[in-house]
Image 1 (cartoon, rainbow, N blue to C red):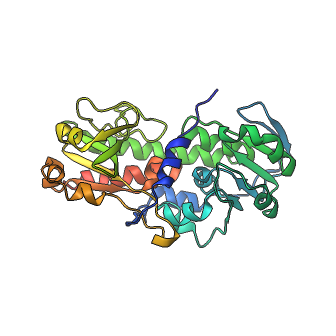
Image 2 (image 1 turned 120 degrees about the horizontal axis):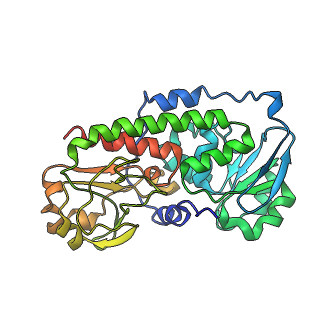
Image 3 (image 1 turned 90 degrees about the horizontal axis):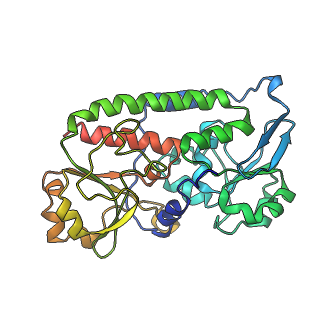
Amino acid sequence: MKKRMGLILSFALFTGILSGCTGTPAENSQMEASMAQTSNDDSESAWPRTVTDDFGHTITLEQKPQRIVCLYFGHIEPLIVLGSPPVAAGWATTAMNGFGTLQPYAKEAEIIDLGNPREPNLEKILEAEPDFIVGTAFFTERYEELNQIAPTLLFDSTDWKDNLNDYAAFLGAEKEAEEYIQQVDALMTTSREKLSAYRNKTFVIAWSQEKNTFGAFGSKATSQQSFFDTENGLGLTAPAGYPEKYGQISLETMADWNPDSIFIVGQLGSEETGYQQTYLHKTTEESSVWKSLKAVQNGNVYFLDASCVTGSPLGVQLAIETIVKNVDSQ
C-alpha cells in the first residue's frame, strides 16, 4: 500500500493562516512552456479504459472525464499540469489564491470551493455536476457516498511523480506526465550540479512558528521535496543533529546548528489578509538570538512559497528554482 503523500503536513500549513507575501514561479521556465502546450486530444484507442485505484476500486471510463471534482486541494496542481483543471476542489479558493504556483491560473480556472476537505460537502459536490471524483486515502470511509454521485477513485500516492502518473491513467495523459517528469528530473540534475559547490555549507528548511519555535523539514522527507538527497535531490547539507523527518525545534536549537543559510517556508493567508503568506514570525525576527545567527548576519535567510513543500509538481519546480536562485547568488 502506498503511503499518503503529505496530507497532514499540508493541512498544517492551512491552519496557520496569517499574512505576508508570496513568490511566483520563474516566468521563462521550460516546464511552464511545456505545460502550456499540453494537448488534451486523446487518440481514439485510449478510450474506453479501465482504471483501478490504490484500494481496489475499478471503473471503466468511456471517455476522458470533463468535470472532475478533486477532493484534496493539494492535487489541483497535477490536474492543471495535465491540462484538466477540476471544476471543484476542497479549499479551492485559498489554494488558487494562496499558492504562488496556482495564482497564475486563478482567473482562468473557475473552481468551485467545496470547503473543508476533511468533511466532503456532498451537496456542493452534487452542484458541481461531476462526471468523475478523485481523492486520497483520507476519503476511504466516504467512498460509497461519493461513488453514488459520480465514478470515484482514491489514490495513496508516494510522491508527486507517482501522483502525476496516477492521474494520467484516468486522463489518458501518460505521455504528458512522462515528459513533465523528465523535464523536472533534468532541472533537478542541473540544479544539484550547481549546488555541489556549496556542499561545505549547511542549510535549514523550516516553518517559523510562534514563541521562537520552528517546524524543520527533515533531511529524508522525500514525500515533500528532496532538499537534502545527494543522489536524486538538490544535495543540500544539513547541520549535525538535523531531524530526518519533519520535527519541532526551538530557536536555541537553530542557534546551536548556526547554519550558513536558512529557508523559511510560508504559511497561507486568508481572504481577510488577501491570501498573502507570512514567513518569519515577529517575535523570532526581533529576538537577539535570531539576530546573532550566521545566516541572518550574512543575509542568507530566504523565503520559500508554501507550495514548495506540498509535494506537488509545480511546487517541486518552484522549490528547485527558488533555492538555486538564492544560493547561487551568494
